[in-house]
Length: 245
Image 1: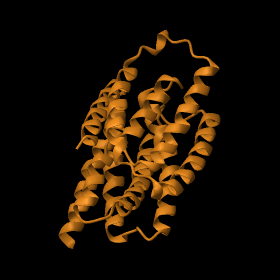
Image 2 (image 1 turned 90 degrees about the horizontal axis):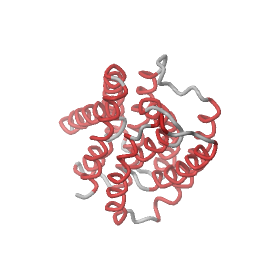
Image 3 (image 1 turned 180 degrees about the vertical axis):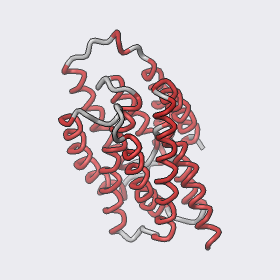
Image 4 (image 1 turned 90 degrees about the vertical axis):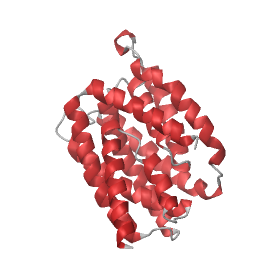
């Protein structure tokens, strides 16, 4: 048991460093790990949500005081409200959905969407309709991401925030961590009430996840926007391949 808990901490720590650097990707390591040590998908989702609480919180601490921390309070408030609604709906729908058939579609959409990260946004004239379209896409992605636990949705949300709401990759990462904190809080609460919480592994995972996420986020901030963009692209490709296996 102690060996398994030590392994949980190590896997959570390493996956969270990678997630902190790229802004995504920890889930494609942790999701199969939970199954590997004998958890059910519901237990894995519950413990993964609890771990994500620590990851999101520590990443926000790393972003705080930098130019990348969310400053548009109106946009942040709207996204938080959308997240509360979609996460609650998603958590209630989750037990009735068979998600296996969506993996290939998610992988394909993720790969097809990647070029959008490298669009020259200086040539785009942003209008209010871009924000409206962006918020509509984000609503759909947040709802789907609350039903199907996949790093692909974090990547797609990052692309929408960057291209349609005119944020940098690091700004979109910080904002995703904030709304992600709201999302996983709701998902964890609903799933834990259904008896899927395994506290020993969850406490170890949140410790490793929080530490790793902070370190990874600080690396991304130090390396800068270009590094973060390519790290996100690499993380997206790896996540897409992982979805196919």
